[in-house]
Image (cartoon, rainbow, N blue to C red):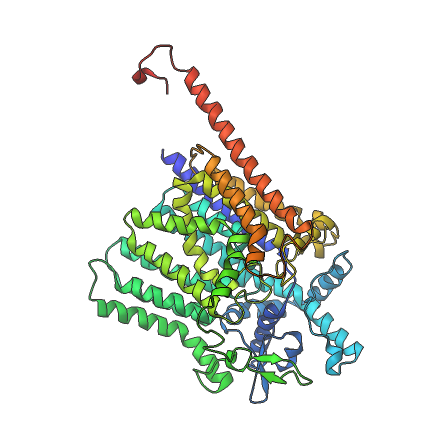
Length: 576
């Protein structure tokens, strides 16, 4: 038995490592957010807070007292600054220029942001505008290297943490939960993007993992303080992680058989204060006040000087008002909705309920509180999906918590969970291989690009492989390896009657086709041509095939067992 456990543990680690390789091989196209982070890290490298020299490369910027600033929290730029300085000292800029030039010779060059402003309307000459665009493309290989540090490695750490926590709640099913998180949610995209969401979610979930460990053993005030520190650092990376920090504060204080609750509260708060101090210090340096945030001065409409109209996030609290019912419906049912693209998350909710019934009410309450809080936050924000994201990117901090519920769902409702996991993986892998930041184009864009071979750049692209499918072949191989190792790490379970799972699968297909119309989404599978239905059909076919194949194998095994039973032998004499 110990050998089997160790083998499962090794397979689980290999599964997560394989998925990390897949993320690291992809070199995604850049948009405003990536360029804002890139400008910020270059500014820090130059000893500056303002991004005046690079402000034309992005629209995610603020204008304050005569200077431009990135609207992003400083944590990601600070984290990747040492890597940027090392690359600069090693002469990476010239290598990056050669790599970008090689990629531009590919059949489908995609590094320049598709929504980059038309600089001619701001008085730029064609030559000067071209220089800005080339500069953006030349920066892309360096941004990819920074992404390894700021997104890929943190995403691997996040999956390891999810696996660790889930294994202690549902032994044997932690790897399945972690790999489903990495492949079947928008983590698949943002683990390979120079965004701050994944590293912030990792820090926030790490704070929860520390508190979870502390609750499992003797009370240790040091772990409570360390959890507060991690929660504070998460805010330094991504400001909305303050919501998670508040929920975890309640989780930290409400420990059974606690030390004095005041001491626990003080330890957590002190750690959180230290963790948020870098963000406040940056605000003091850049904006003259620790409590002044660049979001308050975000550029809404670019003018000839780039700041004609401010106030992008002026409504409510930094752009957040009361949750809107229409936005809530969009978040669930629109063409980029949670249930439309990643239906397996519904099983995470079901699994959280199971966790509560199994005697872990505190952990179930945290999962529920985090999910509800971030859903309401997204529904109240003026831009619920966060731009062109393949799903609500501001919901990412809640995803690892829902993944814990997936472990219970896999154990108790394996057929149903698997039936909804396969469509989720199908859509997320399709998006990651093509152009995930689809905006209002609809998922039919992914099917069209898959059919034409217009795929994202990979490491092989810059090495001279210009055929899209050849360039992404190692990515697909790594994804397949992650799934295979996850299967090896998970105990065999009985599928049983597949009819409920098939019914749920067909129900999801109906939701994914009709839901966007119900939500009032202008882009719907019914009106966006046959390509929009292609991925739905493929997902249903793949899921149904997997279920039937597993059920067939199960029935063959049952018949083989029956043949081993001696005729007329009592039940107690059956051969095992």
